Amino acid sequence: MIRKAQANDHARIVRLYRDVAAVPNGIARTPGEVNDAYVSGFMHKAEADGIELVCEQDGQIVGEIHASRVGIACLAHLLTDLTIAVAPQAQGQGVGRRLFRALLDEVTDNMPYITRIELFARESNVRARALYASLGFVEEGRLRARVNNAQGEAETDTIMGWLRP
Ligand SMILES: CC(C)(COP(=O)(O)OP(=O)(O)OC[C@H]1O[C@@H](n2cnc3c(N)ncnc32)[C@H](O)[C@@H]1OP(=O)(O)O)[C@@H](O)C(=O)NCCC(=O)NCCS
Figure 1 (cartoon, rainbow, N blue to C red):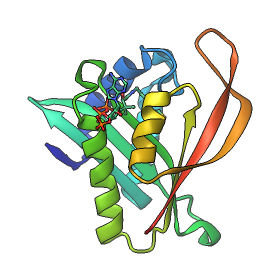
Figure 2: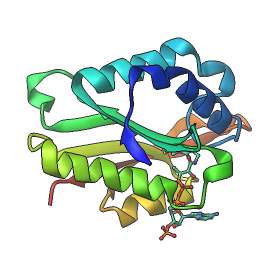
Figure 3: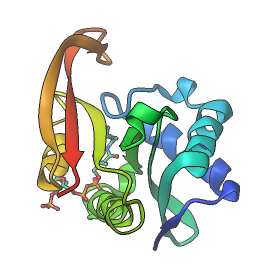
């Protein structure tokens, strides 16, 4: 079931992000960097001025996606700070695609003021980037040596953008 996140999902989202962070080179944070404050921060931002969806299966939150606006007039059309995470045991089963599709549907139908969505993905995260491209995101830039991988080597990051059709 895909639904909007609620405040009482917090603990389960912390657990999800720790599990996802334990697999290197996916989301930017390590498990130790996934703390209550980090998750509260993006949940509050999404609730105040953005969007957050979760996928719940048998009482577990197995996937989450969020994005929010920056809060200044010149970027009022932009949804950014986007992260998607699917539990390792639930990956490859269509959860990520369904979550992202639901976010795009919500933006298309109910957030007419949003005309651009952007995200960052490591160049090596081929799987995630293929998913984003299939949903209409276009690679707009390569940021050399921007992000370190789990081996401590600097990697190229990419920025991808979606424009309202
Ligand atoms: C990237 C991520 C969100 C994708 O979610 P998912 O539920 O695993 O993906 P889906 O099952 O919906 O598959 C989406 C696409 O990924 C690709 N894919 C799925 N499983 C794959 C696998 N085992 N190997 C390679 N590609 C695969 C396919 O292209 C698939 O497209 P399709 O629907 O046409 O078959 C998820 O794997 C994840 O959370 N990864 C770790 C965190 C991360 O990297 N987040 C993104 C940071 S930018």
